[in-house]
View 1 (tube, helix red, strand yellow):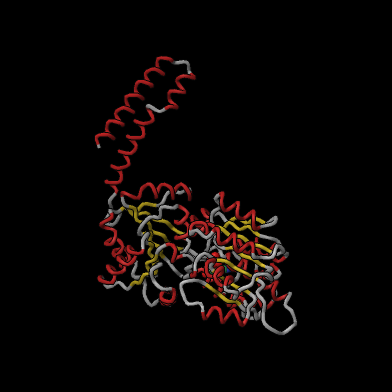
View 2 (tube, helix red, strand yellow):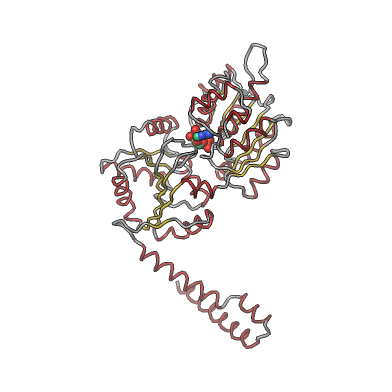
Length: 437
Ligand code: AMP
C-alpha cells in the first residue's frame, strides 16, 4: 500500500514525500479513505501510530478542495483540541509540514504563556486552530475566537483530557460548535466515560482500533530491572554509561524527583535536563528542541510534560518510577519505537512498586523480560514480600464467605460449621490486632 493508493492529492503527496514516508501506517490506511468521504471517526490509538497524519492529511485535502476563491481574512474551518501544550505544538508543526504545498494556515494556542502573540495571530486569520481547552475557552470569552464556522473538529487524546480534568471544558466547547460538522475522536484507551463522551460528539463513526498491546509488543523490547529504591540513581547512571549516552528519555513520577535525578546525573558528568509542569512553557520548548538536536543525551520528564514528545530516533525510555495508572506505561513506552522504528524500554521496580508492575503486565498481556545481570539486582526482597502477601491471601480465602456458601451448596453441614467457626476466629483476631495497633 502506498499513499497514492489513498487518493491523496499531489500537493500533499509531495509534502509526505519530503517527510520521507513511503507507506501509510495502519491507522492512516484505514482512516484516510473514510475521512475523505466526510465520515466521522472513532480512533482507538495511541501516539506513535501515525495518527496525527491520519487526521491532518484528509483535513488539509478537504480544505484545499473546498477553498473559496474570495480574497480576505481566513475563517477558522477546523479545530483540533489537545490536552497538553507540547502535543498542540507538535500537531501544529505537523500541519505546517503537510501543508507546505497547499497553502493552508494554522495557529496554535495554549496556556502558560502571555496571550498577546496568539491573539495577534488570530486577528490575521487562519484555516486551522490547534488549542488546549483552557486557553481556547479563555480566548472565546474575550471574543478573539469564534467557532461558528467550524466544519472539522478533532478531539485528540480524549482519555488524557479526562485524567487532567478537562471534560467539562470539552463539553462547553462542543456546545459552541455548529451541529453540522465532521468530527474525529481519538483516545488511547476507551473507559466508560470516554465512550459516553464520544457518543455525544460523533454521528455514526467509522471505528479504527490499533491495539496498544500489539504496538507495544512488536516494536518495543521491554525489560525489567528489580532494584531497591536507594539504588535507582546508581542503576540509572550505570545503564546510561553502558549504553554510551544514547538518546534516553527518563520518566519520573514527580517534578521534585525529576529535578533530583538531573542534579545527580549532572554531578556524575552526564548531561541531562528536566521538563515538567513547574518549568515555563518557553523553557520546556527550548529544552525539547535541544534534546531533539542531540545537544544532550538524557531528558528527564514527568508524564504530563512528556505527552506529545516526538523525538525521531529516540532509542531508549527508562521508567525510573513505575506509573500507578497502567495505561500511562503504554503512553510512555510509545515515545520510543515510533512509526517504523524499533525501541527499547527499561522499567525499574522497587519493592513498593510490585502491584503497579502486576497491573501493567496484565494490561499488556505480557511479562516484561527480567534482567538480573547487573550490580544492583534486588529480587530477593521482592520475592519475600510476594510470599508474605500470598500467605496472607490464602489465610483470608480459607475463611471466606464463598467457601461457606460452597459447603452449604454441597450440603456438608459439618464443613459449614467449621468454616463459620474459623471465620469468626479469624475476624476476631484481626479486630484484636487492629485495636492493639
Ligand atoms: P503520531 O502517532 O502522529 O505521534 O506519529 C508518530 C511518528 O510517526 C511521528 O514521528 C511521525 O512523523 C511518524 N510518521 C507518521 N506517519 C508515518 C509514516 N507513514 N511512515 C513513517 N513514519 C510516520
